Length: 354
Image (cartoon, rainbow, N blue to C red; front, top):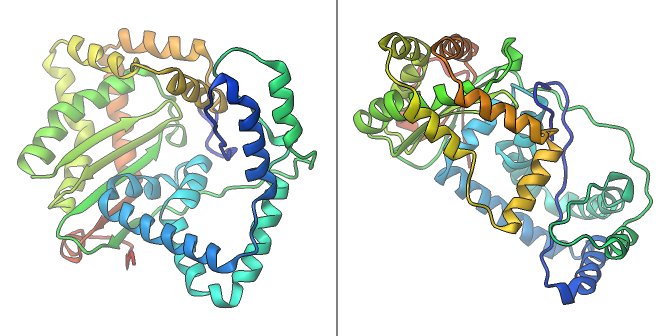
């Protein structure tokens, strides 16, 4: 979690979730106790097999969905939240899995001891935030609390931002994925709901036509989030180099669109619809927990909605200036085949994914 506007610190959470019928609630507590407190880490071969499976799966995920992993990588230099997210679930984690698999014969026993020790430190009441979807049942909540140890919280860790780079990673493919990222707070600007409307205009007019229709990519998008993160990505793109040039013109294109004086209504309606998905009880509970951990209150969501509904051309012009700064920051990651990476000029580093 990271509160909106906060780029220098973040709090990672390990989420443990359980869904159960009302009559099986105590069985769920027993399972939580068994998993959290009695998982065995003394079978090194079993741990090694899990590591290998995770490594293979993550490599394949990057190859198939390089837009998301490229955005993680570019965003790791924009905020502490971005840095820790990439470290735990991006290419940095893949590199750790690759190294650990290769050195497991020498270091596997030590890793198993480390994992066991981490469980003892992580699953403590001092660290707990509990989200319950369903009728309130205090005795049951107390039984969940009783499963956890009373280990102290410990000192907070620091998550330094990654250095600004233009990176490339080679995968066995003829296409690629381009990603560019920045954080509005780091650029001296505060997110508003109008930024989402600007992102919608550029995604479905300019970017869709230039990258998807003309460029032949399977997908493209511009996203902006309340935490200030801005991301530009292309999916299964035959020409990431050309796409990066197209990304670089987004600020000017939005200024031109504002000068055209067209109605914003359809973009506003579309943006609002994105914020109101149909939710099951489970997804509603998960969403509420995520908002809480990120420091977002109901009034923040209402304010964002008001800002979207009252978007003006002047606000879009301010977002266009922010996009100029995003492009000037030049935090780029391209994942693709050797040929498409060779066409990308000025990459600071290019290395094989596998």
